Image 1 (tube, rainbow, N blue to C red):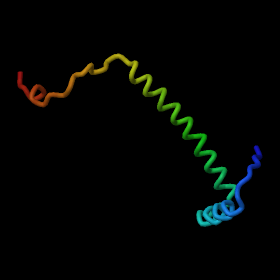
Image 2: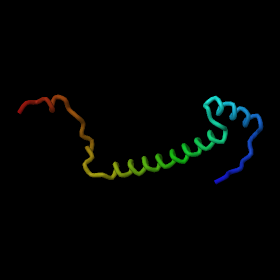
Image 3: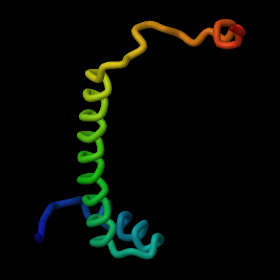
Image 4: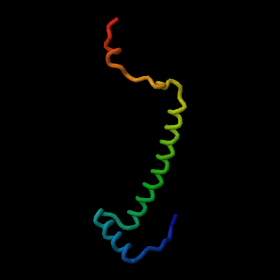
Length: 75
């Protein structure tokens, strides 16, 4: 897909210089950023689903805390 957008010429030149320092064209740097941005949204969605699943899973500790003395008590 081709995307056209407007940006200040000074910003474009500075971005082109920064991309060049990374060994990339400005086009490649923008493409990489968009791929990263799209992936981060998917990861955020997956993390939300995991958190919801974890909170709704039985077997929660219900306030129980580890007690070293109890764990080391001999029968």
